[in-house]
Every structure is written in structure tokens, then in C-alpha cells.
Length: 584
Image (tube, rainbow, N blue to C red; front, side, top):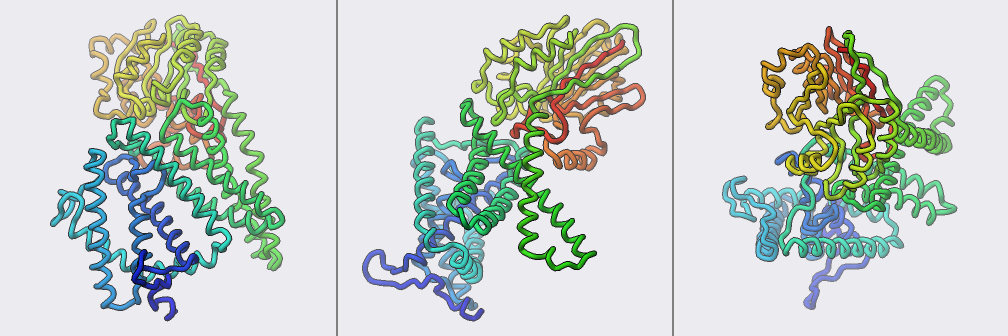
């Protein structure tokens, strides 16, 4: 342990000629790999901090990929020219001064360069800390100095030992080549995008802080950990075919990252959407692999406690538990794909009157979403089989930028739907995520669908109210502000269409007969449905996330939805079309 903190972990030797230092290839790779790790970790750290601070998921790096070049460059150059310090009080203060000043200088130069070159301010410390000016801050310099010194003294020597132990020398050159290739491709792509934007840098994506994006962030971290574990398993178990197993493993790791990137960027490219779908299936495979592995090992441990047979703790049984964990995944995923693309029809009887309105309701079509190809022709045929008087589309009908979807295909298939009173739609949160309200309204005006955005429609003797989605809380009106009191008093039969179900108390207090909602997908993938129920109970005080809910004369149905979000499968039940025999 004493040798570990003796300083100069990378055996740097200074010399009088350029580049003024002499470092062995082995130690140079260690420095390179550590700098690479810091660049990636910094990207995720700054992204999450930004996410919490301004409620937006933003690209904190200059490049497209999940990597911050400034951190990589600072760490790489710093480790090449500055020896790791021996742990002492004098070294602590000296290195705090050196690192704090050096990093602040880099921030000053980089910040001003991008402001001059790309007419943009990537960050500013003005107003955040005292003794700050734009790109530099005395407080931040102190933080960088202390944090950097602690890492240099205690973390780097440990990290170097792990790299030397885990990464064999024959893999050094391939890792460097792969990273530099990706870096150059990323750099070129970024510059092309900036050039198309008249050489003005802009964020490549900026999603609002929602449950969806939170799940993506958490999922990425969980996926990385699980993928690393499975990769170690592949490497150890398939020694007869190491190259084939590693190729399969790297593909299985790479494709989901492509999926997330394509999903965040949104696109109208059919091939990229298909690749994204494959990647999301791989992610689901990993989820069920982990769940199966945990379950099998719990059973194995319980059996061991009662039998005390040491063989149950052997490497043989550990290996068998991993192989056995793969089997449920290979069964569940095909079933999930079938459930996602073969909807069921749920029939509901509501009301006690003599007249009947045959309603067909569909929620969460997610047309245009990345990774799932929604067959609108099949949807229109299934709806027509039910001979509806009226059709309600309960939000999240489209899930992309409007310019990215095939509007002609959408109109062609929606026009096929035969009804007596027409098709009415409300907005969901996903329409808002990619489009302005004015764009969405203009889109619906070009179709055969009537948009109800805090508006009402009288169908026979039934008052139908379509609400603006919960996500647009600033514009969303109370029910008594949507319908004039002189009109609402004339109707005893009221239907509310509200994409998200949590404000059902509003409808119940307004003497609504029926509320139709969607949004939840019933979790879509187990065990997310259990998490959604817990979240609903904790956040809204009621478990109203799927199926039928009745209280006195009030009825609400939360449909599991027709389409899928991201993952092209369902493991919490089949896709759903809702038919309501509504008596009034």
C-alpha cells in the first residue's frame, strides 16, 4: 500500500527535447484509457446535472456522441506532463493550486474560442458563484483543484492497477484505433451539422425532464453495468471461440446505444428505425436475463441453505444459472412481439339509458415512433369491423416531428375509417415533445380528424369534452371553463377524453359519466407496470393506471394502448382497441 502512493504512477521522465517527456507505450495507454473514461463519465455527469438544474435533457458535449472532449484532453495532457503526487499535505496544496489554475485557464480559452468561432456561449459562471466572470470562477477553480488533487493522489494509482490487470496489452492498439475512428467520425458529423446551421452551434437535442427521459438515463447506466457483466461471462466461458463470442457481445452492446441515440434524435429513416427496434429488443433481453439470473440464484441459495451441498456454490452451478437465465428471455421476447402487434378488443358497457352510442377508442398509437412500425391499415380495418358510431383517439397519436412522418399514408388510412359522427382526437404528451401546438393543430386540420383541445362537441344527446394534455399545465383549462354553464346544465350524459388519467377527480366532481384515458401502456414491459402502479399511488394517491375504475355513477377506463413506445413488444398484456356500448 505504501508503494501505491509513492507518486509518479505513470513513470514519467522529463527531457529537454520535444515533447519534453518520455513515457512507455504501456503507461501511455493507461493515460489514454483513463482520459477516455473521464470524458465519458463527465458527459453523463454534466448531462444529469443539467437535467436536474433546468429540467431539460441536453447535449453537454460539443460532439454528438456521449463524450466530452475537453475533459479527455485536459486529463490526457495533464497526466502526460504532471507526475501523480505522493500523498502529503504540502503536495495537496501545491497540486490544488496547479490543477485549479490549469483547468481554469483551459476553460477560459475553450469558452472564448467557441464564442468567437461558433457564436455561442456553452456555459457561464456569471450569477452562479461569487468572484466569477463568464468562463472562469475562483470558487470553481478551487473545486477543480481539490477534486483533481484527491483523484490524482488516491484514485488514479488504483485505476491504473485495475487497467493493467484487466486489459491485456494485445487489446491496447485496437481500443485506441476504434476510439480515434469513432472520435473522427463524430467530429466530422458535428461540424457538418454546425455548417448546415450557418456555423452556429446549437444543442442537438433538448428533451424536457420527464418520466420517459429519466427512465432512459437510469436505463443507460443499468444497461452498461449489466453489459459489462455479461461481457466478462462471454469472455470466460467461450474460450474455444473467443473472437466470435466477443464480436457477438460488442454488437449486442453497440446496437442499443445506437438505438438510444437515434431515438433521442428522431428520424424518418426506416433502416435506422429498424436498427433501433433491434437494439431495444436487446435491452429487453438484458432486463429479463438479469431478472431470471436473480431469481435462479435466489432459488439456488435457498436450496443450498437447506441442503448444505457445496456443489451448489461451485463455478459449475454459477455457470449453469447464467445459461438457464437466457432460456426465459428466448421464450418471453417472441410472445411479447406477438402481443404488441396483435391487438385485442375490449368491450365495455356504460350507462343505463335507452339510446346507445357505439364508441371505439384507441390510445397511444405512437405513429412515427423510432423502433416500431405501426400498421395503420390494420388499425383502420380492425376499427371498421366494430362498426363505430364515433371514434376517439386518446392522445399520443403521432410520436415524431410532423415533417418526419408520412402524412399521406396517415391520411389515407384514417380516411378509410367509417363512422356515423366522425373521428375525434385529443393531444398526448408525445405530440408536444416534438412539435409546437400550432404545428399539431395545422396537421390535424389537414386530416379527416377533429381535434378537441380544451373544446367540446355535442354528439346526439351526449356532451363530449376533449382536454389538453396534463403536460401542458399552463394552457390546460378546468372543465367548467371549457364548457359554458348554460350548455353543461343541459346534459346529464358527459364523456371526458383526457390522455393522462391522474386528474380523474376533476371529471368525477364535474358529474362526468365516463372518462377515457391512456398514456400508461400498462407499463408495456414487466416489471415497469409494477413501478407505474407504485408511482401512481405515491404521486396521485390512487392506483388508476390500467383498466376499469368505477366510483358511484362515475366510470373511467385507462386503456393499455394500441401502439408501443420504443420497444417493439409488450409483456404486460396485448395491445388494445376499446369498444364501448354507451347507453344514454
